[in-house]
Amino acid sequence: MKKGNKYGTHRVIEPNGALPQPAIKISNDMEIFDNEILIDVDYLNIDSASFTQLKEAANGNIEKVKDKILEIVEEKGKMQNPVTGSGGMLIGNVEKIGESLKSTVDLKIGDKIATLVSLSLTPLRIDKILKIDPEIDRVEIIGKAILFESGIYAKLPEDMEDTLALAVLDVAGAPAQVKNLVKPGNTVLILGATGKSGLMCSYVAKKLVGKKGKVIGQARNEKRAEFLRSTGFCHDVIIADVLEPVNVLEKVLEVNDRMEVDISINCLSIPSTELSCILPVRDGGVVYFFSMATSFTKAALGAEGVGKDVLMIIGNGYTKNHDQFALDILRESSTLRKIFREKYVNN
Ligand SMILES: NC(=O)c1ccc[n+]([C@@H]2O[C@H](COP(=O)([O-])OP(=O)(O)OC[C@H]3O[C@@H](n4cnc5c(N)ncnc54)[C@H](OP(=O)(O)O)[C@@H]3O)[C@@H](O)[C@H]2O)c1
Image (cartoon, rainbow, N blue to C red; front, top):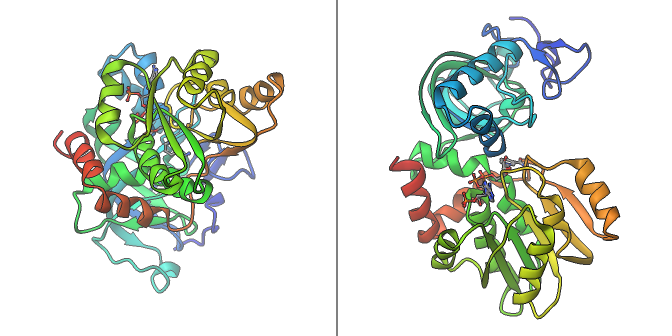
């Protein structure tokens, strides 16, 4: 077997010297190097910002989305949306383990795993798309993928359906980061609180803020607000247009004694929502951008433009033990489990 680089640079075709994530094109030749794992893929979970963009560009035509996914993978050797730059993750079975990894990984042939590194850097070959579930960004395929030596993964738990674990692990970084950021007594605003990561963040934040704190969840209309209220994960639910920052600010002030919040978390899947997340935060507060549709330029210049001295954090998809933390939340909350099972399993 050929010797590979720990970070997968041996797979990069263009540009020379790049790492696989920012690379324009990588090799998806499925002959593995000594430090790689070959995976027989069942499902791709396309990142929500990416899938939203693909659907919009195809005017909702799923056949066109299918063609676009095939075209991207054919061109780039990986499923990296050229507009959002983001990927997603996958689940599948271990098919081969490179020689130099055999004694170091806790895996055997046939194990079912979820990759916890992005599809935007994962060598992927799609032989056939079997099904697309547009409501939940899930693509069932026949295909193979490669995990590098530095690529993290999780063995799928036995007490949960694979598709449920896939959905949870996709956004595992968000609730784990909330655990690190939110302190008792904080007021926390969650934009996109009705979505997958938003619900998990709301649940965790409510536990952490305690009796003196407050979690404010944003929904886009009355129907979604009603759903969010029914979970009990937020102290207050606001209906606000996330493309109108002043509207978001006003709705937050209305439910928070005219005060700005300590922390805001962006769990939305659409672009241009940076200022809706920044404006309601007090000076010295924290803005956490989990959304992959976030623009660094819009956030940095937007904050400057409104004179906000806030700490802005990029949502690193990885936080130590984020996978176990996220799965444990599902085990702990029957409400969350019920919502997720209805959406991601009984589909
Ligand atoms: N940082 C990372 O490592 C990482 C990893 C995975 C995902 N992400 C990103 O995290 C974000 C959330 O992912 P997710 O899986 O939680 O997404 P999701 O379940 O699809 O939820 C998206 C949220 O955005 C709202 N939304 C969508 N379109 C909207 C519109 N036109 N107007 C107003 N609100 C709208 C949804 O409202 P409804 O509920 O009403 O539809 C929902 O609250 C995405 O940007 C995703 O790409 C980041």
